[in-house]
Amino acid sequence: LQLVLTDGHPKCVENNRACSTLMPERKDVNVDSQLLLWDSSAKGAEECQRIIKECDKQPSLGHSSDEGLFHICLASDCVHFQEFHDSLFATIARMLTVGGVALLCQPKRGSSLANFMTLIDAVNKASTSNGPLFHVEMIEDFHPKVSKMHRSLESTNAASTSYNPDWHRPLLLVMTKLRSFDEDIDGELAQKVVKTYITAK
Image (cartoon, rainbow, N blue to C red; front, top):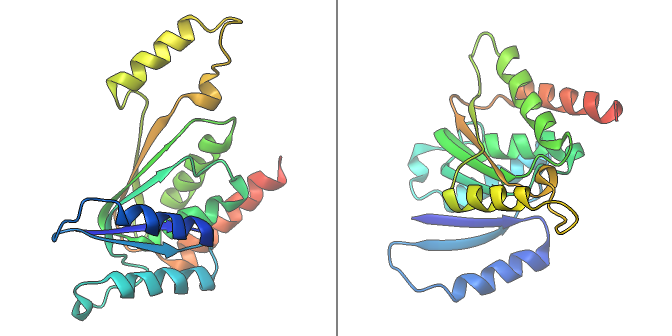
């Protein structure tokens, strides 16, 4: 198992490395920590390719950033920076292998989650020749404990609590990659879509 922890801040990368040394050692698990900034430009593609090459245990297969390498991507509370939606989208699409799954857990936070899903939908619908890039599923009740806590907080949400489902209730967005990522078509369209709703704010 190859586990790669990424962050855009050097200090966080150092913390991830320190934490990984505290994990019980297993011969079948390799944990690495890498600096990775979300970037929808060619520079971002190069950085994704660098990590893919460093982590690829079968280099003879020649994985590239449009095909990806990783089978699972986990991201927590990452879609609230709407101006970086295209960069987050491109990074996930570059790193995941076809058939790979990204699990993003976050609240709605106003329009941020809806806009990110609009971005995915726009890329999927525009790709008439290649077909959609991602299959998308939104799961509200993804764990019984979380759902139970949500119902409990919602029922007592008068002045006694500051719970706001829009800002606090986590939702699980599941993205399954269906084909290779096209930088010129998918990437450029993602940038245009984000500019549209950022300009409209």
